[in-house]
Image (cartoon, rainbow, N blue to C red; front, side):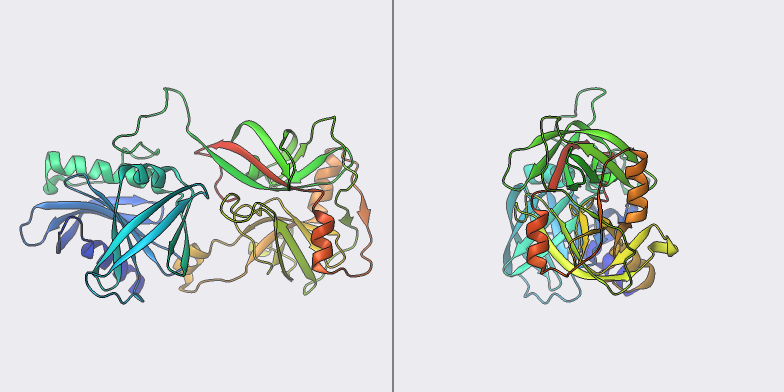
Length: 414
């Protein structure tokens, strides 16, 4: 309850172009976890701005606003913040690991920093999937999945209220079912669908270059799907088969490519408590260009709602790890990393933030998929344990970054 109250308070406190008091919301903006509407100046009763806000599991609440003059702002709010009024801060934001901008924020309230967003930043914010904000030593990640329709709804809100008044405020999201361009952004050609870069991980399972990944990694890809081994040139991959129900896909490297090294699948069941190693390319373009290595244990032999196709693991994974190999302590494949629990949704439902609840597809499901695809994979018995550094070194020649351009409608759970 306190979180909902603070979100509403954040909307009311937002200052744009010197507006210190606000009343509202009038009408509504409801997109994903974003809520908001139109607000008036409490002193004059005149329309001041439209704003929407959403809470994140990292404890920060984002507030996006456009005022009556058309100025956009982005605010970072938290009950734990203690700023002096008028205090300034520089916030560096990076979108999808590529485009960067520096925002200059001011604390008009003790628990909120507010920055004006130039139109070029608004456009990038609208189309991006991930924003990383850095201020001093603080580094925070924000999923921007729904920002396209939110920006469109807020622009619609300002236009509608200026034309019709606050008394006729309604549902401002009705025309924003699909992401709309920011005010000075040209729409894509008729019939065209905007595309964005997406990436995941895959691993080679045969000398002929068969590569396993998640179906959601390639879902929605338009044009070529590329595969990169660390330090080597990209190769174009073709889709051999896919299984949306079990979230698996099989790709193949060009016929001219052969692989001396490839993954072996463990031929014995793994147990709860056994050590595991996850390797993949999380947040590619933002973090290292090399793969990352995380360790943990098998927490459970079933996934959400006792789904026996999955393992629950404590090895940390992030967007971009999807489709990557999960190894046992001997370096054999025991699963395909597929994702993590939606921490924000569980936090909203339970009031608690879950930690290290991640999932991988079991080898039984993987082997059935490869058998049906007639792939000559190999199995191996678990023998002596290896150091994590050796497991990672052995995986380097066959663990691959998978990337493509995908439509906005493509599955975003990577």
